[in-house]
Length: 125
Image (cartoon, rainbow, N blue to C red; front, top):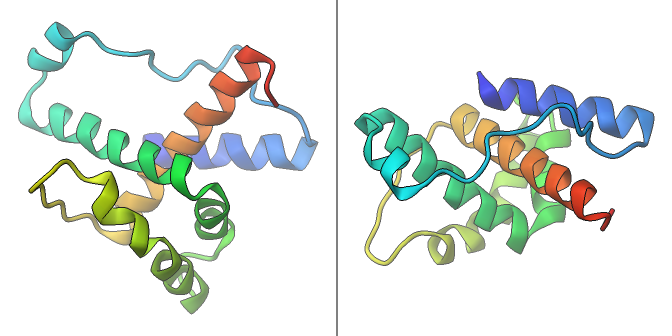
């Protein structure tokens, strides 16, 4: 659900040609204790978001292509194929992850929003 919200916020910012809304804060960096206190699903979500943030940093234009594509058309599949070279380098050594395209799209949207938000705060956008 967070990915759907993040994608809507990105679309809104793009439509208005403005930066991220500083009142719509994504969750901040979590402490190691906070992450350790999460259940397995919560911890997996944090790892997935870290993976997505790495991909956003490595290929921002590739991620934009995914997010601009229609999830029901072949263009999304083609956009994901363009991102594949970044998947392995963004995984911790020896790690394997499995995401549905919908889940990965959501993680990429959330990571993109976080990137835009923090660039906005830093005045770099």
